[in-house]
Amino acid sequence: MNLALFDLDNTLLSGDSDYEWAKFLVDKGVVDAKTQNANNERFYAAYKAGTLDIDEFMSFQLAPLARHNRDVLEQWHAEFVSTRIRPLMSRKSRALVTRHLDAYDLCAVVTATNCFLAGAVVREYGITHLVSTIAATDTDGQFTGKPRGEPAFRDNKIVRVAAWLESLGLHWNSFARSFFYSDSLNDLPLMQVVTNPVAVDPDPTLAAHAEHCGWSTISLRDSNDDNGT
Image (cartoon, rainbow, N blue to C red; front, side, top):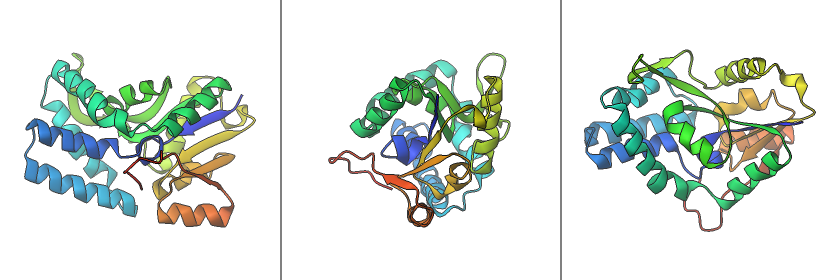
């Protein structure tokens, strides 16, 4: 059995779910458009540059969840997946996941995106395992606006994946081969742990690193995709 790990945004998706969710909330009129758009662009630029303050970003990303009833959020999220996310799921990304699932590989999405946003997206691909930032809830299931534990970001992805494997009675050496597919320089730490790192439509820093190290580089964009990294 092999291990197949997938980054979500700009890897399996031909776009960024966090960025799209912020725009979705603006379109819904439930957040201040000027402030939300400015912060959304600022955080997205910092992420792509590798300078994101993950704690500040989590406060921004999770705060709207705490201001609304869970039932309303679930309705919005279903609409969000239907209108904003499915168009970002390319045929190539679906085929890649299916290939690993059909080979009976242990598959998981590993993403800094919070579990509320990422969970339904991951299930769209038929993947049952998700290692993500946990959006904390109270005893009634309402979001608190805070993360639970450390966000699944950069080096913490290694820690979180190792803990997940341990919960299954497994470890890194349980697999003949381990794959991690990502587009981002922020995922270099985890890519250096697996046996088969794969750069997917990589940013310039990751592309240069992949070329230097002899890593595989692929594209999961369909020919008619307008979104790139």
